[in-house]
Picture 1 (cartoon, each protein chain N blue to C red):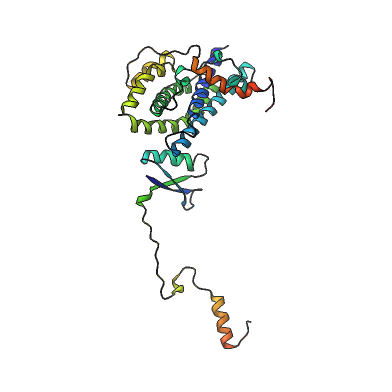
Picture 2 (cartoon, rainbow over the protein chains, first blue to last red):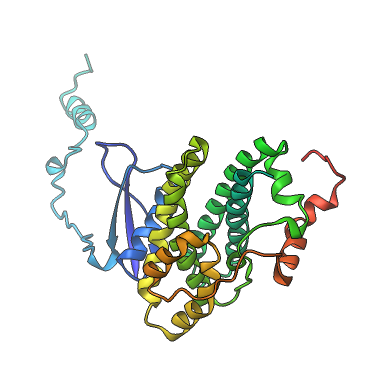
Length: 92
Length: 214
């Protein structure tokens, strides 16, 4: 059975994926997680999750290039440059 | 030698030799995760031995390395339980681990109440790591407790386990393990298996002249 580990380095910080390991059950997973991810005080907390319990979603079609919906938006700079060229005006 | 120094050496020798025996599993444990975990427990035990030797060394006017490596085989005071070479029998190794940790828990609890503040202090410090060792022993116990190869190993090692503790603590161990108080295998002159261990353990120290700097 494979377990995925998420570790928190400092209180208040998000848990970040740290790696994975084999363990036959929860008791063993608990012991091994402490051993591999917290023995040297490198974590303040751990989440351990059986890999089979994780649902991965990885296909996100974007047929119409709706960039404005994304959090990073689209590059204003490039669009502004194109518009200026069309209008024949220089950047201020 | 004072009673205090003798007690410290008994404890330190137990931890050093058990750590040494458990480290024989490094690289050959049943699976990798356990290899790392068990090796790390072995290292902790050797770390405890170091702290205990340090304390004894102050009183005896020497240092921890000399106590760990420069004594003659017959001068070691470790229990017979920790001397046994159990590789490649994993069930016996876990049986020893469970029995030793159970006995050690009783011994440390008693030591924490000791009048000598240094002894009580080191017991409290060691205890913080032993909690994890016990967790590890208990999870293996849960996994193997109904298997014949495990219960047979406990039967065989039980008289040795009693010998880890002074007689006053043995009834408590018998109660915790759920076994009758039989004749214990006492700490005595180390046996043949110890002689081979000692040869290997002290080989590097003996290869250099006395007082060599590392």
